[in-house]
Image (cartoon, rainbow over all chains, first blue to last red):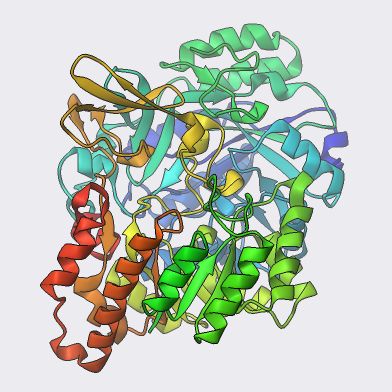
Length: 308
Length: 331
């Protein structure tokens, strides 16, 4: 059991925007987030360094505004580093001196280890308590469980992990499933990544990939591949020492505030989780899933999440 | 430049050794390695025989323990590390931080190589493993261009090994959940991508369909070859167009850039394919051995022999090859 679990309620976090949105949309989005009941906001470009709607200073300004609005603010680093310039930007983020960093790659861990405390992102591959303890010893104070791991794996961690570590779980959104050198959005436009012309900005919720019998299967988001179904753990907001300390909501182009509101109602008890799940289905165009949480195939809807 | 070859069983190990491998890599017969396929890999007796065969011929043996143990089964990975260490293998190929922590504490003299499954793509990431666990070589994911590999080699505190030939993961290894999303079992936790038990082949009037746990991965005419339904090599619809939206069935082949890899200081070239037959291992090892020797003797005038290229193409997925991410246009 982690120390934070003894507090009475699960905190809600807002993950980084995984898509490429225009600057104005991002500014509007975060202005609206200031008034929502999320406790923690993760900011930054985690998918592709060619997306530059926001410059570094824009991120810092939004971070300061959200902090002034009472949010805990975390800066998230790129998940896949290839170019030296990308490494340089991660170093700049790690040295920002003010905001905590979510390390999404071991490069960031190396830059932060032993110097300042940090959060271990879901792409760090923390699969067992020995790994977690090692990173905890280097300054990690919170970890985000890899999305493919289950509730029972989290329970296994909680039996052995250092008491002060907080556990965060991906609770709402299209699951990040893979990263590649290749940009699949550019490929769909029949150009290479170097000639992408930032075409992913045309797809504010990614580009649907369907099977040849028209089953909505995956979502292409530049170099990232996501699930088409939305992973939903609204039933895990009950006050339980065994569950996660924090549930993460991943931004989508529409209805994010509504999703936050429904999660908040479910955690405060003003709305039953089943009822919230029912309403949340309308915020997920091709249905919900929660298989990973139940130890099954990720695309399965096997809990009480509703589903396709 | 060392040639590192795959061996899924004893005959493959012998084939690799006999055809010029500098090192072979193998795995135990369980989910502690990333080729956990039925009938593949080594039991204790076979490991002893393999080690004996390789050692008497001057070939090194590496053992891959490169999947990610979960809380309830960590002891199984500890046992694998202990066994490999007790056999005195030349190196372990490892991915999990917990496993590295255990191995470096319990067997400080045991050489560790960072598996491709650890997803280390920068010199800072590599430095982490070198500093924390004394890792002595890193295998990089198939996501870097030649220029990026060069920069990594320049700045890395330890030698770098890259993939030279074989099936092509187009996603960053160690961070791909496509298989577990569809089947519940994937490379990180189960040691296999798109496990065979979830594969269904079915015929309609004129077509052959391949499915993975019910999801249609491809549909081909009966006179076409249907590939194994790995998700990233399937045909899907995007923006109204049906195509290989992620990657075509193809294999990585670096023969055309061998002099570049040599010049930038890559320490070792790895051949993928522990799941392949001894005949495949023999042929690919022989070609790569000849190519590397030719390149080493005269790198400035190296040109891949036509016969080598056609032999490798005939052994490739979809009978075609690619330079993958080494070439920026591919990305």
